[in-house]
Each structure stands twice: as structure tokens, then as C-alpha cells.
Image 1 (cartoon, rainbow, N blue to C red):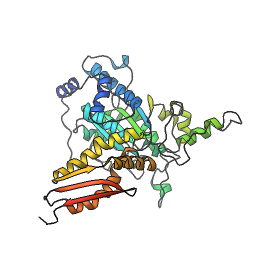
Image 2 (cartoon, one colour):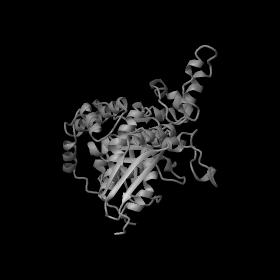
Image 3 (tube, rainbow, N blue to C red):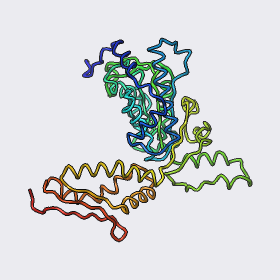
Image 4 (cartoon, rainbow, N blue to C red):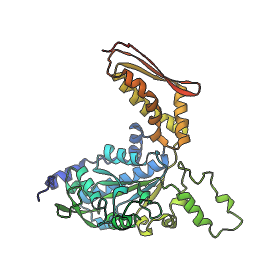
Length: 385
């Protein structure tokens, strides 16, 4: 059966031109560009990932433009990013690799994948998504970036999928996916289907992962408790109390130390194959965003977008300073990070937007605090246009 999707003719000349035009900017310049694009916070993590990006581009140029034997160069880098939800992990990958460097970049939710032969997407279709991101050009896909989001959910201790026939129809432990990722994260030849389908009879292409960089990201909820239990199981008396952190057992917005994330044994206790974690050149801890950073993101991104939307509807839009502080504190309380900033305001603005949008009659919308709660004042012409 003929596939609906056709591969682009590889074209070595086009491939070389693409690599030649890749940005060769320094890690510092990339770091600054992220700030110009609105990325806030995570200074240490941002530096680490920018350096990884520089090394990736530099390595590709050395191999394909300078003709350097890849065996004399450092191996490709795979990074694991660990940090609470809403702290900017996947956004960093999307912004740096996809929009600034313009490399083929695939963001993949790893929780939808199962070991080959079970219900769920085959892990080889991870590279199908990368192929699609590269406009179906296998040569461009072979130098791209894959972001494995929700990576912590495939640990054997975290996958709680329960449904009829779970024991026989789905790889619920996540270990099968981990095993299949092993060869992918190294330099190997992978048979990649051209379509996102369960059929084994569709068209395929063989893709090398020797120059594909993998960036995994996850919140790793409960990782600190696993780490503390492992480190303290033989500890009696002295030093035991000093290891107890300020976070409760159900805390989400936690900060990970370098010592915690650099221990393969901690990840093994969490439910990961140690050889899989060893495939990552660097484990980068991300911090929960503080109030100042959240407010900066709220003002420069969320409010700016809302202002443009209301302005397009012919409405003046304003938000009092007190509201900004309230929204930030609410995000901190709910431990949602930057992801939760827009939801609070959107919920309160829905009624005003419903009444005002589409009238094209002008007016004003003001968001303020009233008796400790967010209130929205709407002043428009009530005549329906």
C-alpha cells in the first residue's frame, strides 16, 4: 500500500547548505537571545543548555563541512532536565533549538509510548515525529533535536496506568520503553515508519541517531523523598535531621541539588534503568521560579498578549499592580509556575470578554482587586452592533 506521505529527495547540496547556514553563535549570544525572546530565570540551566546547543552545531559543522572524522570528535550530547512544572524546561528547548537555531525539533510526550508489540505508540515513531519536523527530509532529521517531555512518567515506580487487561495489553511499567530508548539515545540505525500508525506494513526509512541530540524533561515529583530514603536508610542519629528538607512529601515546586541529580543510584531507586540515565551526558536541575521572575513573565508575556487581544477588539485594557501580585502569589501557592499565570486572569476575564468581544463599539476593561478578590470593570456601549 502506498503511503500518503512522501520523503523529500535528500539532496546533499541542500543538506550542506542548511548546515552552512546554521547559526554558529557563541553560547553567550544564545543565552542573550533567549532573554530577548522573553525567556526568564534559570540562569544556570540556561547556560548549560546553550553550551550543549553550541557543541551540537559545532560538531555537525566539523563533520559535514570540515570533513573531520567523527571518531576523533566528542560524542553527541544528550541532556536530562529535572525541575518542577511550569519552570520553563520544554519552552527552553522549543525556543532555543526550534526558533533561534531553527534545527528540526520534535517535542514528544513520552507517556503515550509503549514497548513494541503492546498497545500504544511504538517508540520508533518518536523519530517519525522528528522526520515530519524536518519536512520529511531524512538527512535534516539526522541532525535534529528530540525533546522527550514527561520523561519521569516512564519510570517503573511512577506509572500507575490501570485499566481492563492492563497486565496483557500495555507495557504499564515503562521499562519496555526505557529499554527501547537505550539504543536510540546512542549512535544506532533505527527503522523509522513514515506514518504515525500501528501498521507494520507501511513505508519505512532507516535513520541514524549518531547526530540526533535527545533532551529529556520531567518534574520528577517525589524524587527528593526517594533520594532521602536511599541516602538515609543506613543513617542513625547524627546527620539524619540535617537531610530533611523544607518541602513536604506532596510538594511540587521543589529545587533539586546537583548532588541529588548526579547520582545514578537515585534515579535507579526512582525506577529508571541505570544504563539509560548513563546515556545522558548531563543532568540539569531547574529551579522553581521565584515571585520576581513570575511577575516579569506575567507582565512581559501574559498581560502583553491579553492587551493585544483586547486592543484588537477596540477595547482599552488595564490591570492594577495589586492584581499582578495576587496572581503571582496564587501561582506560587498552587505550585503551577509560569504555566498557571494565565489561567487565573483568563477565568476572571471570561464574562467580560463574552459580553464585549465582537461588538466593535469601543470601551474599556479594568482588572482590579476588590475585597481581596479579583474584580473586572467593563465599560462598553450596550447597544448591539
